[in-house]
Image (cartoon, rainbow, N blue to C red; front, side, top):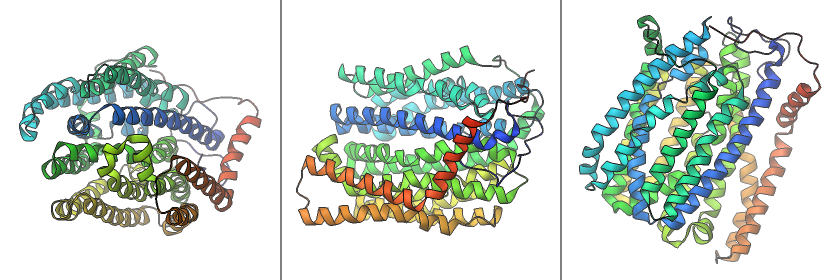
Length: 512
């Protein structure tokens, strides 16, 4: 959806990574954004259904128990996400089957190691939280890293910008997870229902990946190739360690201060607010292969950065504003009053997460040029700020103060991102797109705030639905007026693609 040049034919990387004419990169990116956007909407709808079912059928303690296990496991797995897939997309090797097998070997080796680490740490985590029922859940979820590695053929389709096949593979996970999880929760399995649902979804996707993979799964290790990946991935690993400490630290802090139910409130707030970053993930994954193809053209990279973030803000900012405006009604009429203590967390963390998305994909541009060290510096600074502000506020002033402290940390993080991107892409107009993106959600929020103040905040399901409709309509109208040029430009690439003649040639599909 994001153009990457002002005209002409793009020069692709030397290995002709795309199996389509080079002049189609713009329209392919636009079509990819549509595919990824449709996938995003479907997955988020499934995720929200699951979140509502979980909130309705499970107690805060049950959700808190699973939250402790899932945060522990997923943050450990985040350490495994050291950019092997992105390094594979970036590389220019001539033998793509061999390149895939080298990357897969490294990823599978790391996955097996992390599976063993998760299993070994399970008794310790149980002792830390004083609940040994955690051990069984962690042992079950220790299989996840290996199942993730077996889904690596999705990297090949991403590199080729074949988003339909990539997303078809990835769509298996949320669908199967929802069906299995809800079925088991209804049967009274609680946290085990969520764990077994996650395993079933990823096992199904792994089996499908084995079937449709364009390359054979083979163990292929070369020390020289491994060193190249290590040089790319080591800083990302260190950044992931910082992320692990933040996510695990806040869960432990909430459990210590507010008990298992407190961990459940945090888990629910994080689960709901994490949807603010979905547009960024979708757009960044769409454009990353294109960024890798234009790394010698900084002006065009700056254009991609600015426009991709304007598109991301179209989702993230109204999502955060909507949570701030309607969290009370969401709890009252959807989640249930047992989640009332989580209301302020949902509101403030929703806003905080939305702000955090502004410029969030800066790491993709640094990775595209092979510079990953700045990500480590950024992550360390974020960890220090997190330990210095939100955590002390939690213990001295409670959960709401923690959320405001997190908001302040994200503002500082936004400033650091701005500094890094100005160093890499001096022509990027970061301040302009941030201010421009904030206008539509502010305009859409004003009538709702006035309406809520006039009505005295008395609960009414009908008024909640009507206000939500007004907010969405006002936001769409404001965005259409202020971002018409960008939206028209994006649509033009889709029309151009549909009206263009069949290509006279294609780049050869990479084979061994």
